[in-house]
Figure (tube, rainbow, N blue to C red):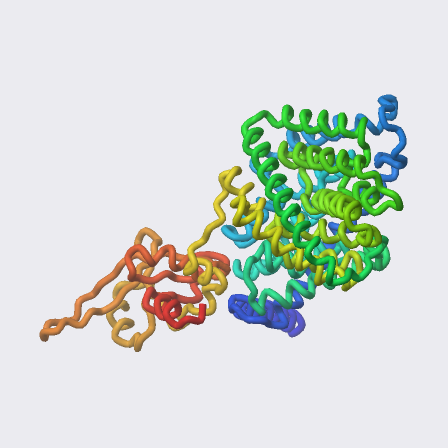
Length: 573
């Protein structure tokens, strides 16, 4: 008879231990500070996100083996079956969209930005399947879209899904989500530092140390995973970059002005097409994008795909100026048609192709007047890529670091910085350009702006501020006695309607007996942040909320308006 008792005791001890460690973990994660627990979780979730991205890349490599244009000399050959692939891709994308739930059709970087900002990075898992297969079909059928779009969406979904399954506090769910994004970008481009900078500059848009380390660990995980499967490959290290003399910098400044104008024109055109086709039926938009891409592919197949063919033409031994100009317009039209009409995919890859063509054209035109520029065509292509990405996405630092890692050549830093500044100023001050992601959010009717006080409160979980000194009374006869002995503890009582009330004794200024006051009190899960408490309490600027774990009957703390206001005024958020 002793053994079963021991088993029960052991099981009870295990349950108690699990509950203790779960509470300790939530307490650590609710704080806006770096912790080993936060880093370990980010690393574990990044492994899962990296595996999803690597699976996507492997399937894409397999598909491209059969569908990607292998030779570029079939111009005008309508009989080549690959010329019609974009039309097939449009039908496949539409089919996947129709099979999926209508509630989970939104995807892409702009949508991820919206979810990170307003919903703690919680992205519906059901949207992952649509993004996975639609982006796979888009990239596999040679649409002019990039790989980073699905990498960001799938990385975010993978990490946020696990964070919700682990029932983590909402403030740490957001950190896990952006860490998954970093893992996805690093696993796609083998550029861990660029992934960190991109997340901080574009997704999070602020620097906090408790964000930085989990994001950095996740980016390392993504890069290592990529190297284990595909090798330590730098995609643009084939570009020959030579250190440019200082007397060439005036020409670079003029090139920066041209690149700024081109980036502003591209952003305007893309957003105009996006807004025009926003309310068209999906099948019409997809078929139109497929038709435009097919027509371009019949004439200039180098303009299709993510941008690799365009970059290859830009850095070829003896590029033709007329061919590069034609390719530039074709690439811009193919990209605007694909992204603007709703083909799922990223924008960075096509921007690299457009930027490389622009840089090469600038170098060739300048070489007509200054022949000494001819050896630096490779550097001009990289500068063009940096400026186009930096200006169009409002991410100049991320663009610079990405090209630095992908070319594996530090000599691009100074000239790229020098060109990006005038390009950015021309586009943003001269033409009132904005980040293309924020403009897409406005077109889609998705909010992004959060008041500073709410944004600050979102960084801390309710467990950091809740008062654990409270008493729950279930018997009216004991209420007065409990109130007298409360000694500063909050007293809660469940009324006949199963609603919790906050009960207190008010001491009048005269000699009358104390008055009993009570008012209903709302509850919040212990995974929520201080912002949810603020939203409930701020209209009346008074009151309390109770904090529960798992179910409303399991109350673990109380937060008062006074404590919340003190936290806000302390300047620690």
